[in-house]
Length: 498
Image (cartoon, rainbow, N blue to C red; front, side, top):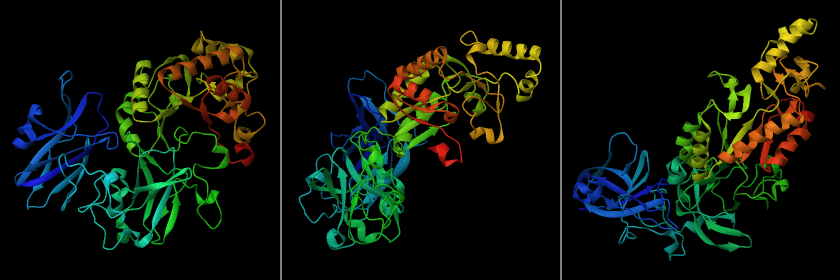
C-alpha cells in the first residue's frame, strides 16, 4: 500500500460546496460521487484542497468533483478530457499537485514526514530556523527538488513586500525549479517577520540549483487564489549573489542608472495615492470577444496574472463581424453585438469573482459612417447632395440624434491633418460622423451610456480616438462617472502624447 496526498487548486466553489476526488478503487469511491474522498481546505490554504489516502499499487484513474453535502445542487465534474491517471508503485509516499480543469499535474515522490491526519503541510508550522524545505519538496504547489545540501542561508535572499499585500509569496520563472512560469507550481517563500511597513520573506533552499541568468519574477498568491505578478518591471535574472529585493520594483529605465534597488514599491511618485490592489497593472484586451466568452475564460485570465479585462465597445453598432464595426456606434442606449445587457452583467460578475476589473471601451468621438469621403467632398459644392447626405445621417442615427448634433462644417482628416489643428473637429478619413463634442444632448446620451455600463459592473474605462476630442470633454465624462480611465492617443508627436 502507498500513501497518496492529493492537492488541487480549485477556485470554483460556492459556500456549502467541497472538493472531492473520485475514481477507480474503493478508496476513491469506485466512481461513485457519494463515496468519493473529501478534500479539505482552510483560510490560509484556500483555494488549495488536500487529503491523503492509502491505495494499492497499480494504475489509479480519477477526477476531481465539487458537490454539496446537502445535495441541493448537482455534482460538478471538472471538464478535462478523459480521466486523470496516476501510476502507484514502490513504497514511497506520493504527492499529486493539480489545478481544477488542467491536466498538467505534478507528482512528487519522497518521504513526506509532515503528512499526518489529512495530509496537510502548513508552511506556517515550520519550527526549523534553517528555512530548509520539507523533505520530499515544497508542499504549496512548488518545486519537487529538495535543497542540494547545506543550509538555504548559504546564499541569503530576502524579499520585502508592502504590508497591504496579503498572501503567499512565490518565486516563479523559467525552468522546472521555478515552476516553468506557472505560479501554482512555483516554490514558496518563508515569511520571516516585519520590517517597518514591509513584510520580509526568505527565498527557499533550492537556490543552489538555479543557473545564473535564469529569468524570474515574484508573485503573490492571494487568499482568493488570484496571482499578483510584479507588473512595474521587466523580468529579473538570477545572479547567485546575496540580495535584498523589493516587490514590484519599477523598471530600471525608471530608476537609477546603476539599477540599485530603490525605495519605491508601487510605481512612480505620482501613483503614491492610488491603492496598489485596485490600480490595474496588467490588462487583458479581450478584443472583439463576446461577453459570454470573457465570462467563461475569466478564471483563466486571472490565473495568467492579469488583473483587468478590457472589453470591446458594448453599444449597438454597425452590423458585421469585422472589428472596426464595433467602432461605428449607431445607438448608445442599447447593449448589442457582443451580447445582451444581461450577458454583460454575467460577464462582469464572473470577472469580479475572479478578482478582475472590467474596462469598458467608449467610442464618443464619432458614429456610423453614412457616406464616403468622396461623397462628402462633392457635397461641399452641391447643396442638393448635401441635403441628401445630412438627411441620411438623421435617418441612420435618429431619433436620438439628427444632423444638428454633428460637427459642421465638414472637414476631412487626412495626412498631416490627423495631428493638425483641426484634429478635434475634423471627420476621420473624411467619413467618420463626427459628433459635436460638449453639446448638451451629446453629453447626456454619453453619460447615460456610461451609467448603464457601470450598472452592469464595468468600473474603469478607455476613451477611443481621444486625440480627436477636447481634453475638457473627456475630463467631464470621467468626473461625472467618478472612475479611473485612460485615453487612446495614436501619434508620433511627443507633444501630442503629453
